[in-house]
Amino acid sequence: MTKAIKSSGIICLKAKVCDLERTLLGGQSFRWRKLCSEPKVKYCGVALNTYWELTPEKDHIAYDAHVADNTPINNNFTALLSDYLRADFDLELQQKNWMQADENFKKFVGQPVRMLAQEPLENIICFMCSQNNNIKRISSMVQWLCSTYGNKIGHFNGQDEFSFPTLKDLQGGRTCSQLDAELRAAKFGYRAKFIARSLTEIEKLGGLDWFEQLRRMPYAEAREALVQLPGIGYKVADCICLMSLNHLQAVPIDTHIFKLAQRHYLPHLASQKSVTSKIYDEIAQHFQQLHGQYAGWAQAVLFCADLPQFQPKLEPSAAKKRKK
Image (cartoon, rainbow, N blue to C red):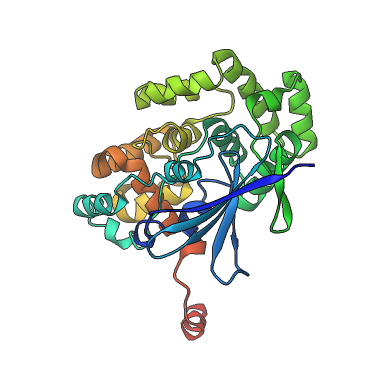
């Protein structure tokens, strides 16, 4: 029987530079949820082989961290969480720089979104699952992967929680075809083939060592290396570069950012119906020139500001008037 070990602490990350709701539930990761029944709002989820319960306070974030007792892991949970939330990045200063460079940015800068530092393998698979999909369905697929191939951490807040499987866990003596079949049976659809084939290719390239090589490469080279994997296009490659490989200038262009660019930044694209490779590059380069070396982080702020779930709630009378 799995027994979880608990550790508690705080990280000195003030509320004015970290909106946990937008950071954790805004589409960067798919393993977090909000606990609304608590006296204080908490966010719980799995990252870095650890189950976390995070409570935002005005001047810090309090955490409870749980790991399985047989997990060989760095037990400095304060350092782990600080790295995950990039606590050393001066977001307050950077947002001022973005507002000076971009007159539109102040419209979107209401809540500070932090860029998560995620593990590359998890990030790759999650964003392969994200193609033509919604957050609820992606989260369900990722949870199935973890419960099937990962290791159980424990039972928390009504459900079992598992670590994300390693490359070895996912392959586990299976052939590429066998893993493809298992994922298809779990309703991964066409994504099953791409995930299975990409894992085989990552293993050939050196596994975790290959990810370290990608971190050290210039951004453009890392991006080109990623699109050689089966089923990965430039948008997913940019997500991986930005969220896992420390290439913070990478700007993923999805439907939200495309429409936002049409409305506020590149009005000459207003008549365009879809994102061609040429338009993708034009939008990405525009944001990189405007927002500099951290353009991908700025894009995350814009992205969350455009999501329906983060729009200001109207008063009932105002909502009724808008409906009319």
